Image 1 (cartoon, rainbow, N blue to C red):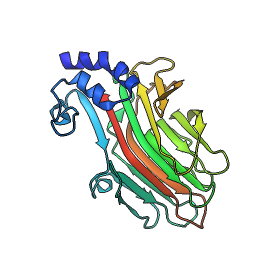
Image 2 (spheres, helix red, strand yellow):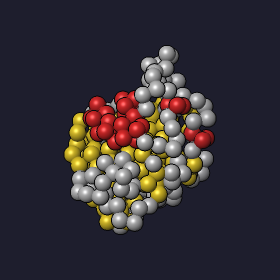
Image 3 (tube, rainbow, N blue to C red):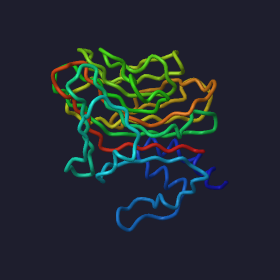
Image 4 (cartoon, one colour):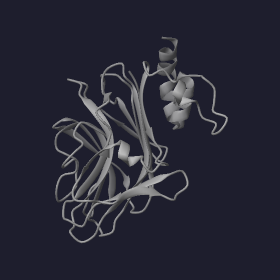
Length: 259
């Protein structure tokens, strides 16, 4: 129980610093790895936290995740420092390619959560790409809807996304069923990495989500905790063109939640 108390005390301050390693170190002070200077996550008690992290350094990184796809899109690990996965659509209109975990997280009172990822979309056919990353209950076909690649009209959770067309904005959609709030975050540029994150404070109150882009606080949003639903971490890409395969690159994604 002492570890849980330290987790609750340290989570918000650690999030402001923007590093998962700080958060885990505050919660589970087991010392650091001699190799990489980060806490030994293998010693964290699974009875205290639910934890998912993927840095995409192994060839089987994507194969360990669930996939929803059309056709036979290519995917693989790039020769890039730190590990970067690349995956694409095919050239069929409204083709999509998503990877996601099982629904192992849950937005519920007393269960603070921290999500962080670094990704980029590379448009091969101008204004025809839709990209998405976050935590939702509706990973699968049409997580991004046909023709404009906006997020599904009904789901629980939050997702960062870039839709097709000339909008050219990075956005966040927060959803409880069909009640949804869309928040414009910043101008989107193709072939540019964005580091995004959300801290959920585990309280049934207004402004219980704190939003970050490239370590800049982008304000707050509210996620209703009525009838809590299980959710999974995921990401994906969709094309609204039939001409070129669109590309999505992900450097890392991580999420930790108090059980």
